[in-house]
Image (tube, rainbow, N blue to C red; front, side, top):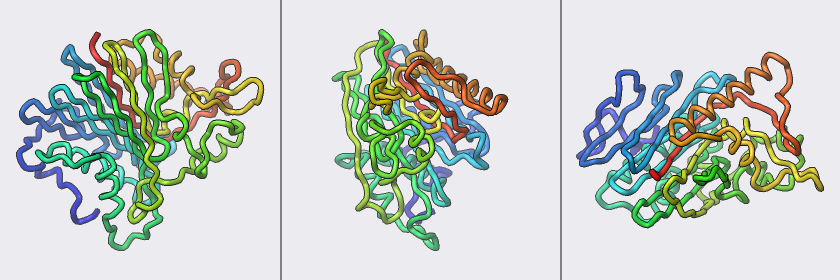
Length: 324
């Protein structure tokens, strides 16, 4: 780990640590109304977080994938008054576990600072890329990221990301939209929209421009924004979720549509009104699809003009619902 990585055992100056509940295998920070958690510190056991105060409902979950020996995903939640910050991180390769942790912890440290840097997400990501990893080649892994900054004062939500971590906006009426749709789900640097489903399923593990030591020059920051009205929600997920959503196919071209996964996710989340309900519904759908594939040797049947090929990757989810 880089020498300047945050040391959470001691905790940032001015912040006091405590465990949220007895079976909460991660650390939560509280200070002057700040509620903060980083998930994924125990790389072998699932970790969950849930918070609700009438204004907002927030839930998160990180767990090891069935096909993985150790979880490399991480997530963070930082709630300070009327501002909510959420993030998911998908590490991969030998350095991925450290990088997903380091990026999440660095964001929390910067948010807890009295003097927050301008363009906080980009500042932290570039600082991670500038760090050195003694004895490790620069190309041995990385992490993706999706980060949401939500203000209850002006109803605004700013989304930023690197590589294929995804963000969705859920309207109160159940309508789902993928934020940053033209940039997410990249395969070898090409957007998923316009790909044949078979090619995507074979190559979806290949992503470019991730957060890696010494790779700042290759970064491409994806940005989007949205209004979050009462009853609306934001969902951030790593590709352990998106790989288990059916992709939408244009019936005329038989190519994947840009807003792929939204229709499937809308079905999965039908009737969900809380953040914890959203997380539970997504995990249940993933398990059901993976169980079917393991038991039958083939993926479950997808809807009309859709294709599905489940994958047992690590999962990180953070869900937010604004009170009605």
